[in-house]
Image 1 (spheres, one colour):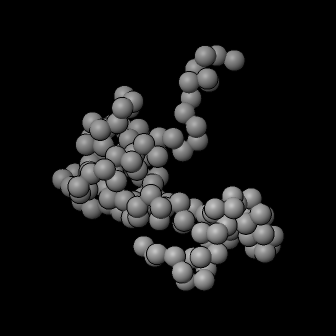
Image 2 (cartoon, helix red, strand yellow):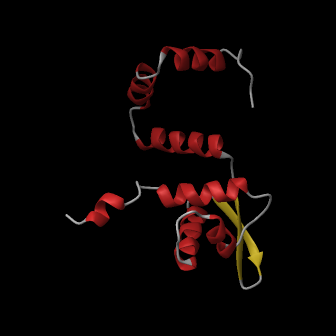
Amino acid sequence: MSDKSAERRPAGGLEADVLAALWAANGPLTPAQVQETLAAPLARTTVTTILSRLHEKGAVTRKRAGRGFAYLPTEDSSGLTARRMHAELTKDEDREAVLSRFVSQLSDEDERLLRSLLDGEADTL
């Protein structure tokens, strides 16, 4: 095994970096603008591919900007995480088992928070 495999980013790492750049921006960004904000040196084509995949997943919207596109996130970080959790839940036919296991793995604090949210007692966003 080469040393390059040890340096690989975790799955979704580039997407997370690109989304973080979009969340930090005050408006839509082109792939070149996203590329400039990233810490890791990536080719503009790589950034464009990542943005296109995020668009296909519904995580970003895009509008024409010259010959290309400028991108905006569809949701904040919490909203995107919630959407991913919901997508995972819908993949399994036994929703009760999935939810049961999810709840059983919550910390006591998270369980209290979830109970409060379900009872309508917690602050809503």
